[in-house]
Image 1 (cartoon, rainbow, N blue to C red):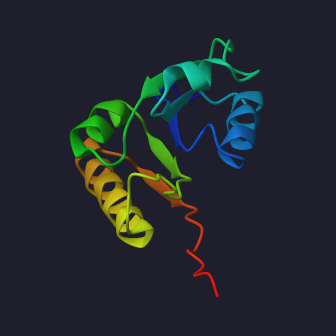
Image 2: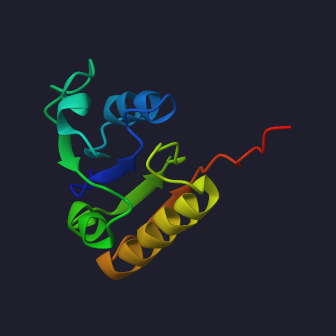
Length: 122
């Protein structure tokens, strides 16, 4: 079995919170990434010995690079709803660009992007 972990961004979200335990059940090592390690540590799967928790802010490229070190794949499950951001679409683009560039320089073999489309209010 591959020893390098699979990184999951958005692990505290709806999809990521279901993907992490599925990957763990299938024997993968997982590195759950989030802005808050404490929030990740509250998840029911957080004590799994095959799980690593890493702090990562996708708005900061160096933070992403550090979090991806040694990973073989990454699932990108983020949609920006940060109230500090005035333009959610631009924040999403910046975060995705940071992840893409960090993954490319970190030797990630595979990237899965499941970014939800932004819907404008009518």
